[in-house]
Image (tube, rainbow, N blue to C red; front, side, top):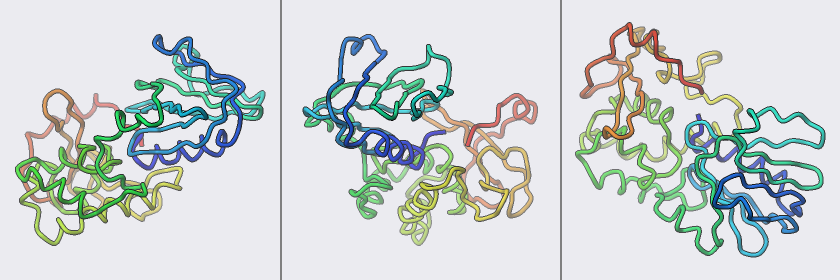
Length: 280
């Protein structure tokens, strides 16, 4: 599941493969840009911004993409089989003399003037893995609406950029509170620690192939995707319920013994058996 660390890794792979090289192939498979041609232009850099990717190209052009739930960018050597998905899922191809980057299932793909990148990412809060990280500003953003549930506030990229559903659940577990606790009711010492705890989690995972928050070999995550298995700390069955504003709800995991605060009505065991286990 793409989150800030996943996008950072994707940007690094794309930057290594494309930056400083001339594009010999350009194919954007979305109707609006079907006739756009970037061949002959040099890729300047590929930069992550929260969950967004900005591929900057010579001539003041930026290709903006967002992975959302299941998008991905794959890089292939000449002659290597493309294995990211069937061809009808390809949305973008950027090729150089020695590498080809292929974007699969990209729900957001657009060309912008580089000077207009703010249209795509200007609304974002401080980036947990970016040079603009500002813990005080991120905390002020989170506390701006003290009645808002903590889980929803963490997912709001306008507060701080890079946290997705996995880190939301894991952060709340590490803080010892449920994702439904109002932000303003988080104990003061945990409130002060929240931004840097989030930053540390993403930083230690940005170079890892498998995301981990526990420090335990073979047990990668404390609660996310673990319902109804036992909590790694206390043995209580982990629970799951949807959280959101009604228009965009996400499965949210928590331990009812280790995490204090309000909880929704738990999902019935029969529902757990039919719910697919989310990807890491």
